[in-house]
Length: 282
Ligand SMILES: [Zn+2]
Image 1: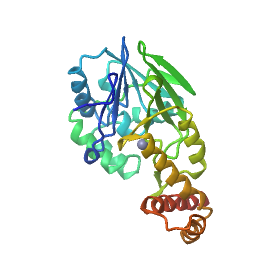
Image 2: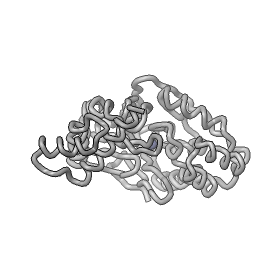
Image 3: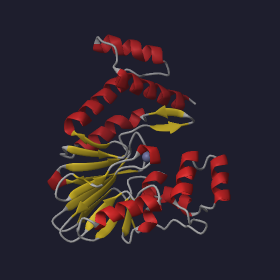
């Protein structure tokens, strides 16, 4: 079932047990735009089936928020213009050269080119894939791109985020809604979960310049402004006290500056920023 956020914005909730991220649908008077194409052709088909029931203008555009497989592997299913930023385009090229038969998939997992979870989803949700080739995106933009769907403006912006360098966010001004993809999350490098500390404040600034009251996230579905502000606040408070690879020092400094213990979220973020220092020092 699609969730209806307004008369012109819908989304399909994320489904964690199947590694399925949130997918968005924005409808103008003339055409509709999709945000993220799903983690597999099956995910895309499930979404398209829901859209068919809505009687909305034809889907003309698909925007991919970043080059993680779960956000773009369903791309071939859409008869629409696929839009990515230039960095996402470069990263997707690697996936276009892959073969998707069992033997090749196993090889990619062994060489760490692909996660075991990705292989499992492909094997489950792409039964006919021995000759599968991922298509190329159609429109590649650099910094921003504005699309008018007919009395419905969508502003796409490429930003560097704590999750990836190639994040695209999508803002719908008249609804005050922004689709963030995974940009507000951390990432895993060399088995360490971390937030890219140097990008935290610039990223929050890039997002907060938009007057938004609802935020769609890749693996959380939806947050209101208050929830988002608490999230930013916890992240920045945690970041401020992490200045080295020492978790102990960071926690001591948190207690000194805030006159209290960090809550569970803050502690999780502090550890992630310490991990970022460890990765930077390697
Ligand atoms: Zn991601």
